[in-house]
Length: 420
Image 1: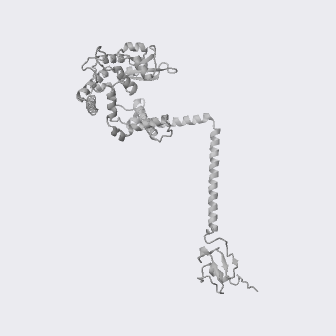
Image 2: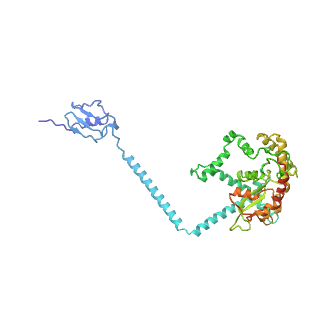
Image 3: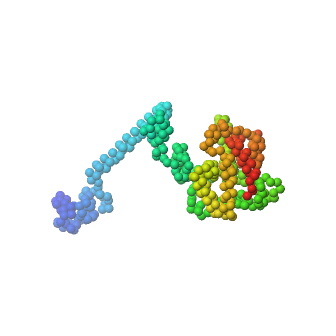
């Protein structure tokens, strides 16, 4: 009769094996062999299987192999369940709040939203006014100091400016915003992308490493394309641009087109397209105004005070240095000639602080292209404007001139100035 084996009879021996007791081998005290799936360590033997010497297999707790993962404890399972539950509740509550906000915003009256925006704007304006006034001054005694005293205390006139005000400060703030936008990565990389063109153009202007590498070559090319410093081919000491019979005289109108149309530089006058000040609802007009000075105000050329004299002397030194760097021969003499020409222009230029320049109705003068040609005959206006605007303008085309006397005097200066 086949012998049977009772696990109950040897319960103590199995317990000792399970907890890594006194048995260091797999032979029980009754002589039977027990084959274990792993070491007798407490954590690795729990739940492992065993094989008896008579060939019968018994499950000591689990059918997992020696390489399986350990079981999770009850405490770990509870903590994991609580964590999952809490995360789920957070997601549900967040979704409910988002849906509620969206529904309220959709149901809100548009007029109510406009009122809220108007209130926020009024609050910002009120804070701005409050921060700029001087409450220590009685408004009835000195209203300007009362209204602007706080702003004046916080802002001084920078060393590089003749004047400074809130409009200038706002302009600087907007320039900072524009700079941040231009330095952001380009999102539209297409060939015709206006964003890419603007950002590439700006970055080329601030790429000092490439600018230093190019040196004065780009500016020298521009000067050479305009005839060079000595107006190559022009007869020296000729008394004017319009002298008849002068061989190979430079084409002054071509130079004006290059500076105004190609390089967008105001020489002798400014040329822009703006809304017609007396018909702003339906008409844009070509506008011509006084321009052409390097220094910010015409009074600086006239030496009316000590500061003006110092500024003009520094400007002369700077111009002489620049001319030498750009390859001009006899830079001292050329700088004197240029400043002399600019001084003549300053004498006919009305200061922007003059009352005449503050009233557009006194400056506004709408004339035809034919009338402009009669006022300033030293320039071929139709050909110039046709080339700049790529059009064939009629001689009856109306143009707004804001400085008629200035344009007439500029024409006389051009005609009487040496070709050099």
